[in-house]
Length: 367
Image 1 (cartoon, rainbow, N blue to C red):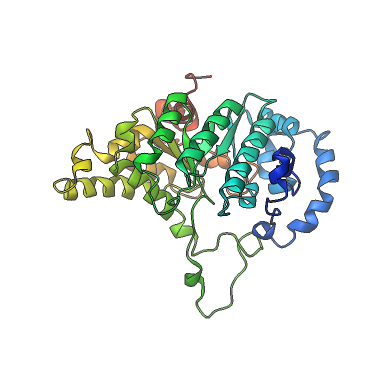
Image 2 (cartoon, rainbow, N blue to C red):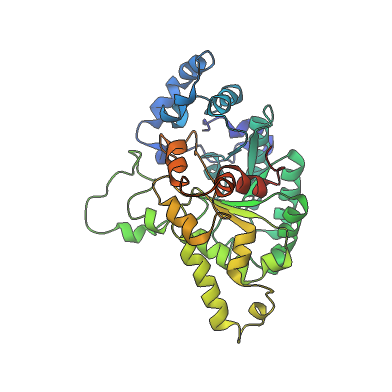
């Protein structure tokens, strides 16, 4: 949970002034005022006794360990968490939408440095870097820098990076480098466009978003939040990226999973219906859904029917998540997901709570 001056401290001095100011519009109507009180709040966290009930307490900037690694470590201790993927929240917006490639990739370098610096003191914290694919050559340079810095996963936007696909052959060196390094790509909410604004223009009063602000999720956004990552994964499979890079791994995180059964069926339908006419489909050595089963993981939201998803698709696809310190994981993710997995055997439960995430990150089984 970044503050306004966080990213600039890691940016090259020549580009620092070209970063956009950190906007709090997406964080609710009182976020800017909250910033003034944060130093005092965070100081109390450093002496606070943190127990397992921290998961049901304040979230966002008010959560213990929001931007303090030492306190985050105490949270992991309290929740008995062995590994946590750590994403940025708002700082990506300071550079990700610019058309100036120097600023885009300069901001990327700064963010990746910042993420690694936050996670470095505790090996349980796994930094998620960021990688725009707009320029394949610059993307390769930025990826090599991020891997050298020590990121554990790479967040790529799920929208097309320009007038070309993320599955374009010019990006094959990027996917090959990730596969070689054993570092997965991840898709995440905020990495693709939500419902186009025109669909919110319905002649009715515009509601506040669910956090009380103006730019976050609303009811109509949620049913379509997966559209961009679903397109991304379908193209990666059907254009043969996983065929060409058999050790590449990826995940769709904080995007829900109700859409996964349909994706598995639809890519197979596409293969069956169009392989006769498309040579790339003919070159696939297995069904498209099998690539997804072998290469991609998904995190359900706690309010989704995880038991149904596992029953429909099998236990190899889905991973537990708390989303801490964000609120989307709810106040009782351990209990909710434990109940959801109670009808499955110990092997499936182990896959959900540890094994699938460990496989994604290339960690040794059981540790």
